[in-house]
Length: 254
Image (cartoon, rainbow, N blue to C red):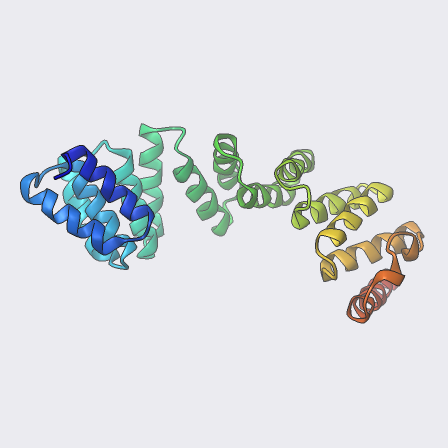
């Protein structure tokens, strides 16, 4: 029979492997002997949430937090459970409570950043996303942060953020596209076209990239054939370029 500590470690391993029935069975045996063990009760609540039973998970967590109200892991689990139940304001309060205990908690910062962004509370979103990406750089969060910084008019910070994306993935299409947009808006057309070319190489036929590239070529009076090797493109990509050029040309005449 495994030791108690080893048993709980085994349960966590089964959870990571998504073997929920085995994890639940091991925990039930454990809880018969240790009914008030905080970690075991926490793991049972997590199993309930992962098994698609958030109401049961919430009840288990609330009972657990009567025993111990200062465990960040349990409060964080309650926040995720409330979010799944659509109780966003309560979930946010739990995430904030986690940060009062553990100010460097990545999950709390990242979830609050996303929640505030969805609610268009941009300054709050940026604050939490900056904290989250400082703890652990993440392409999705960095890309979201970059977009929000553009919305707030913090273009220098946005450029730095998108360049950080490229350090993690040099072919990240959205970062390349937005760097092109930032330089285009500053009328630094040569630099913008370089980023659009790289974005197009990363995602051939990407319509937004083609459109922005076409607009930039028209604005800068630069032949698009100097930017794209038209001979190497297939019929579908050529038709997209024609559409982008036509649309961009119409807009430029308005």
